[in-house]
Length: 111
Length: 114
Image 1 (cartoon, chains in turn purple, red):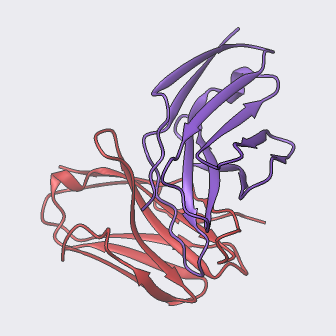
Image 2 (cartoon, chains in turn green, orange; image 1 turned 120 degrees about the horizontal axis):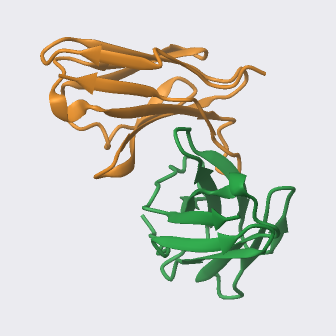
């Protein structure tokens, strides 16, 4: 399985933008880039995903490098409720792709 | 939509006992996933089903673990006999099946084996 590399932890101030990086140098052409987050004592929840183009939704934006070997999850204005572990995952784009979680980045948000 | 429903929320049992965890996926979803989470190993994929058929069970730790999906609305994960090292949070997730679809996770079952 293609793997991702994320910083173990990051800090942010409330109301400021947050850029969470992810390296995936061994990504294949059929791998989708997925982001999930896990709030304390909850199951993971979907944030965003993309293949080649940048993506936006109500939660976040996903910026994908032109060579697809890295991506960045952007939270435009961090709130205290955004404090969570953020997982960057490559998911095989074939008919039956698993979702394999790495260690993720623990984001702390300071008031 | 009620989301993915798991039961029980908490389970405390003694070593050697049989444990059955249950999951009801979101209606209309045809893929179902079982994960286990511990501090040491993080989130591990145990098994996943597509259209009630097990597709990949390579993450199932050993023969003590078994999973079934008798129909599209129900799945079980059974541990027999249970051991203290099985203590973890077990999550069930479902999706519409395509790899372009997001997974929806349940609230998990906190299992403690004494």
